[in-house]
Image 1 (cartoon, rainbow, N blue to C red):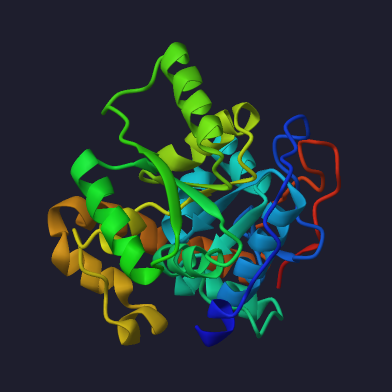
Image 2 (cartoon, rainbow, N blue to C red; image 1 turned 60 degrees about the horizontal axis):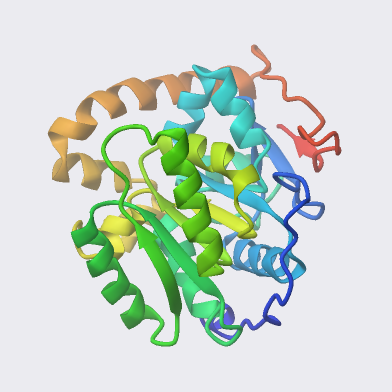
Amino acid sequence: MAEINSLTVAHPLERRSGGPASVPPATVARVNVLGVAVSALDLGRAVRRILAAVAAGERGYVCVCGAHGVIECRDDEALRQIHNDAFLVTPDGMPLVWALRQAGHEDAGRVYGPDLMAALVRAGQDAGLRHYLYGATDETLAALRDGLSRIAPAARIVGSFSPPFRPLTGEEEEAVATAIDVSGADIVWVGLSTPKQERWMARMRPLLGAPMLIGVGAAFDFHAGRKRQAPRVLQTRGLEWAFRLASEPRRLARRYGRVVPRYLYLRSLQRLGLKSFPIAETHRSGAPLPRISSE
């Protein structure tokens, strides 16, 4: 974390408001994991790439993706396209890190949503980076502000919004977009569940001037102190799912029972060359995607 804490960037003085909805990263290779183009990087490189994009006024969104997200993408072509159009798709879980390493990216590491949020909030202090929080309840947002202030006392949280438990109307979405733009946010943190947050980012990206939208899901609850994170030793060994299942069996048992066996089965087929999962080679803007590899 020392490397991340020392990062500084010039504050973005201008915001590009008429560019493409999302800009594919030119310097981060991607690996085809069941048809999802996962960015081959670690936490430090993810932070540096996002800070550089904000400083340059690039506009995009970041999907923090685990095995659950990959399987959701297998069942939903539109969601898969949302991921593959993202600025970055970071490996949130160890199964995706292992897939990156199996493809030859030995230096790939986990980019865990709560860690990414903490690292970027810390790293942006000297630059005066402005953060907006979207998602969760008002009570959780208040606790999240307190949690982030303990992580980074000089962090600038310029606004937050707790959406209702229903889809927003077009008029409400326009009002939210206006509020975010008026706040001058550089990064919009989205704390909804997968795939709601990915759909929200893709839908709202053209409406917002903020350079980066980042979906981090349960990171809001973790940094707000509403939920406990798995011990780091379990996280690094790919056993976080067991801790979370024990903590929330009713909510997660069905999901894990569906996701884990299917992910392992499909990855085995992909690695053995028995099934292919093609990815379009161009971004929706027409620009070529970074090099996409598989085993």
